[in-house]
Image 1: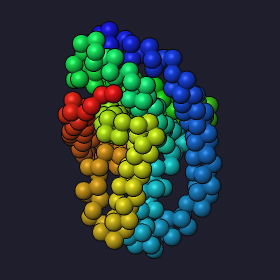
Image 2: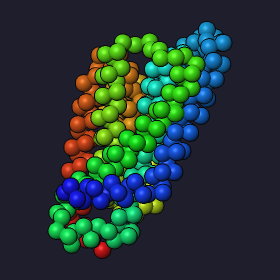
Image 3: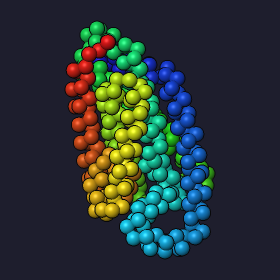
Image 4: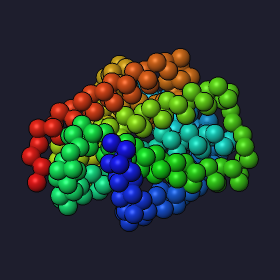
Length: 273
């Protein structure tokens, strides 16, 4: 298992797509932070009229209010939090994972691992652990990129306690592990890089979009949709501040377990060419 894992790490390190994605992730983090800053600055100039408009929109106003809550405030932690909850970085992570795992199928290297005596379970866990490292690298670079403008503008500042920050970071960490497990499962099902990228991007986007539409007509549906992994990631800080931190860890544990088990079962039954 150790030899297999080291080999996968070597492949990841030498992957050109991985290097490109982490660079793009870092630059995108900087750009998005600057855009958020100017968006918030513009809204702040007319915040009272904006609030009045939102309140007059009824159920639609709740959706708009949630969107406004995602815009960072004038402190460093707020910019770090928005980077962590921003699903843009997960799209980059999905691409990296899809290329890494999908290429194993297209290049036939999975068969080499099987012929060397490694079990299907060992192979899957090795790919999964490597995918987790790749995803976390992309996310960390994105967060660092977003933190740079925040640090320059506001210094090392936060509007929440150190304890809440620690819980938030831990919550995001386990949720990102769950997202990686989800993407790895998708890659195992599709077996092709192109299909893996498409489904990894489309499935979360489609479900999240349907959730938004349903919540416009059925406000209470939000209590159900917060158990959807990618919605939980977006709502992490809100869940912590509303004393519902347990939801984060329950969702993460369930998705990690289900996606990993399903991925292993599917992989063990596949014909490796």
